[in-house]
Image 1 (cartoon, rainbow, N blue to C red):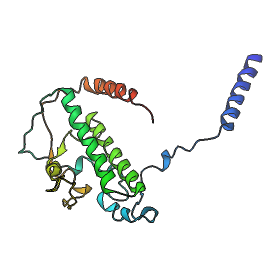
Image 2 (image 1 turned 180 degrees about the vertical axis):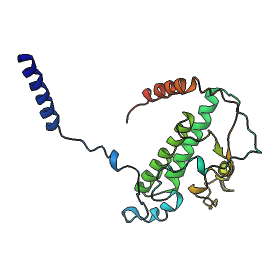
Image 3 (image 1 turned 60 degrees about the vertical axis):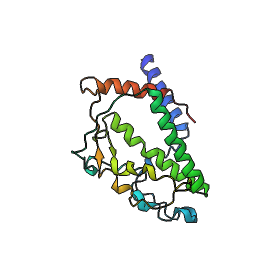
Image 4 (image 1 turned 90 degrees about the vertical axis):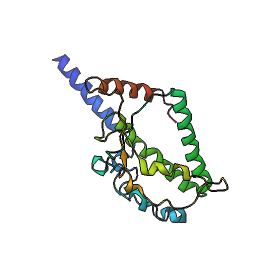
Length: 204
């Protein structure tokens, strides 16, 4: 009898203790959905922000397999390079993104929102790599082709409109072949690699 009373008392204390702890609002339940940033805070540089991906698609999470048109006639086979060579190229892309944001946006609020959108949209490719998204691992060749247009004739960053929006992503999709994905083992090995990488990330 005493054991039963003790157990009941323990449960009651646990419930009361839990209810006494303030609930922290993580904001998770309100993420996603419609979030318009047009004219956010009355800041003019936000004009037209929603035109690119849409007010309900901040991080381009609507980009799906149905959005993709694979270019069948363009065969690309991956070939492994030194990982340091890859890291060099990605660091250049990182610094280019920082240059574009810091040189071509003067309002710090817009800088912040544009960067967070850019950063969040990359998570979709992480899901591609782990085969969680339903999309093949690839890229849009038409959009990539604009890379050479970053600079004007005087070496400064270009400011001309390249004539596409976020909804055009995937219309000229190339899927390189030749990777070593194996359904029987890669879900586990890639999942472990992902966890190892995430555990190495410093929490800011």
